[in-house]
Image (cartoon, rainbow, N blue to C red; front, side):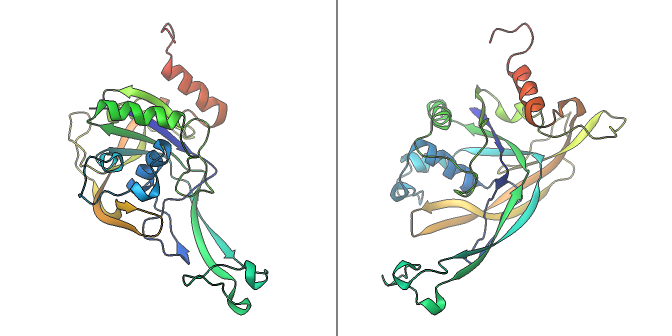
Length: 273
């Protein structure tokens, strides 16, 4: 098992899970379809080839659906709703196209929708691969993507620090060591720890340090079957969530303070860069 860490932070993110056109939701954390779509975009997989329906398991997109993700919620962010309009105020020849190839009439040209976003959220994601070559290829693609990447929607580009670290033998375990993109709480518990939420597409193993006593399982409709331009199909899958206590000293704050903490994590004192 090998993989890498991603840091997903931006002014806005949006991870739709059961969106319709007029009402577009966001999940509380990155979805599998969103993360797989991000890797597919980085690799330059065309929409027409984004199919994983079992007919050809050797395609590059189908191989991406074997990647396992564990998401650490550094900051949950705040849900924001945006009242959105499309196509209003234009003459008919410039209004929104219809499915029949025409244009919407002037009296019904404006399309109204509500779109939801996560603001000020930050996540650290462990991507696990059983294929070392694919892991390296994906990491290189994220560092130099074929197409621009986004956090759920094209209007939500990622921050500069996206690929946090690659070539990790156990990226999930590394989530307990990489700095947290959050401020230290004003009052630190006597245990010297902070509660951190994790979610994954696989059950969490029980260990001596982290006995799995209480966790939640929900169903999300975000396992991609195909992400073609006009026909997107998903399957439901279980999402496992748990809260763990991590050392409060991992709280690295925002901005340059967080970047300094990451630099120290990547290049400890005395280590060769």
